[in-house]
Amino acid sequence: MFAIIAGQGDLPGLLAAHLVDQGQTPLIAAMEGFAPDALDVDLTFRVETLGTFLVALGDAGITDVCFAGSVARPALDPSKIDAQTMPLVPVIMQAMQAGDDGALRAVLDIFEKTGFKLHGAHEVLPTLLPNAGIATKAQPTDHHKKDAARGQAIVTAMGAADVGQSCVVARGQAQAIEAQPGTDWMLRSLLAAPVEHEKTFLDEIMDVVSLGDPIPDSRLPELDPKIIPGGILYKAPKPGQDRRVDLPVIGVNTVSAAAEAGLAGIVIEAGGVMVPNLEGVIQAADLCRMFLWVREASE
Image 1: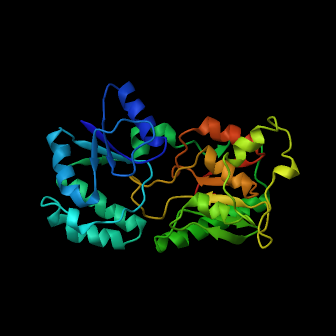
Image 2: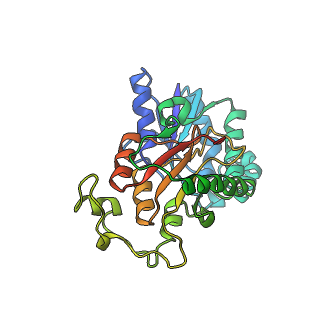
Image 3: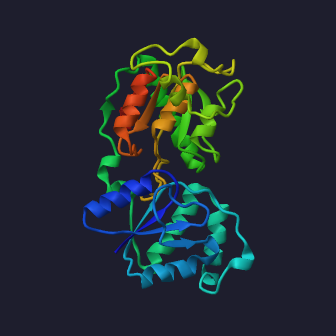
């Protein structure tokens, strides 16, 4: 029997629907405070009760597990650690002090040693990984291609320190790198005066333009004057990371944030970044006159 350890976002729902279509009804589990957006949760757990949660999965007949969706590191309450979890405390504490990849490896190791078979989201639903190529109307220029190679080198270097999975590059210069706050925060850091809006940038421009029309200058936010406009967002997994969990994801909101930051396109590593709503992402990129390049790492 299959279980999805679900975080937030659309991905857990897509996987659950796919499994149901395949004749399986997965058990949905979620960490307290990070319930999925559109799924009923069968089991809720805390890190402090992980041992009890693992026993509950086994009692439910679970043999196969997939982690999907976003979660943040929770604050631990030592008073809530139960007897079943006590033997795992040294591993949990070491994981909480490690980088993201190190922490996830420790969690995967706990699940595997308990006897569960782990699956990556892209293994459950292979269409999450788009084919290499450029499906958008806009195409990268030669300097964008050079920026992509530079972005690959930067993310590779970041991965060695277990820091992040994306960066912004323009004319060969690193404009921003992803850290704990995430990709959207990184992109908003490029704006001169980031402000909160009721609508996303993409929703706002859809109110005033049609596909292929230019975006009015009045709708374009002011960039930080130190930022070189027309750069790219480059996103790829960390070198050597376990791809069964925390594989990078982009969506329509990523396109919106990149467009708001004045970027010309998004470059993702082929086979290494999931795009759950590829058609919607391509349409959003076309509306923003941006390119989406699914790039082979060897290019």
